[in-house]
Amino acid sequence: MMENREGRGFEPLRIRAHHLLCMQGFQGLGYNEEFTKNMAWITDKILNEPFFLLEIITEADSICQHCPHLVQDKCDQEHPSGKIKSMDIQVLKNLKIKPGTLISSQEALSRTRNIPPAMVKKICGNCLWREDCLYYQEKSTP
Image 1 (cartoon, one colour):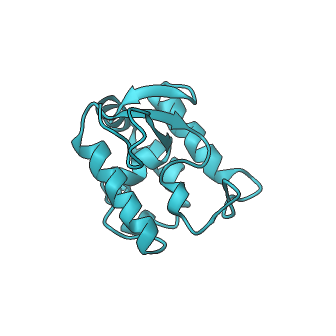
Image 2 (tube, rainbow, N blue to C red; image 1 turned 90 degrees about the vertical axis):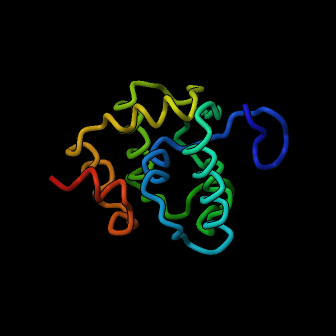
């Protein structure tokens, strides 16, 4: 297992469930330079180190920590309807895991590849980034 970015040892990286999909479609775009660098680092670790340990969650994660929309550990973009958390929950259901599950990056990515295209459209359909997301484009094209 690898050290996390902060060098605090062998703690799992905390990742929102829907971010597992985002990372597979990431093309180096983001809200700002700090966010983009952090997203690139995390994406590289998860996609290229198969035994990197992840804790899958439904709240602000290691990616959100560098997002300009994070205010007091909450996303200020979160709609009162809970749209973002709903995306996380739908991903968890499709991966057949619960919040707080510890899983290797390899296993998490393997499970995301089995999410049916119709479900990807449902989960990601209102995402701001869907037009630039390779994962969404690949999964939503017949």
